[in-house]
Image 1 (cartoon, rainbow, N blue to C red):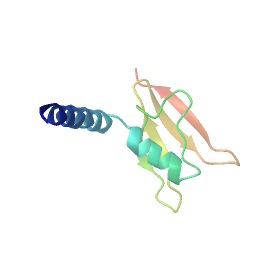
Image 2 (cartoon, rainbow, N blue to C red):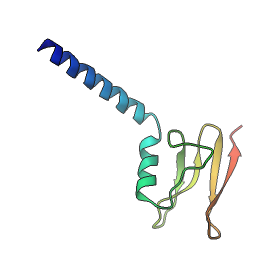
Image 3 (cartoon, rainbow, N blue to C red):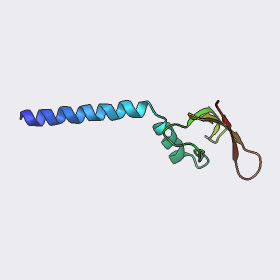
Image 4 (cartoon, helix red, strand yellow):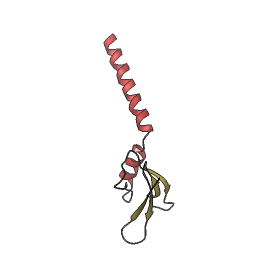
Length: 91
């Protein structure tokens, strides 16, 4: 019985650690955007853990207009058939 409680405690502690880690990254909001919006994407120079959308489209589509990660700021250009983005070093 004691071993069972110890395993439950370790599981709860591990789950808590995962939740704390995920709350410190951009993984959940980025995965949500990728799963729910066909126009949402992560720049190829970045990744789902660190890319942060700073300004979102105010219309019916839910894509980012500006974003950043550790190294770059990104600006989305929606003119034309294919969306393009520009990256600017943060330094």
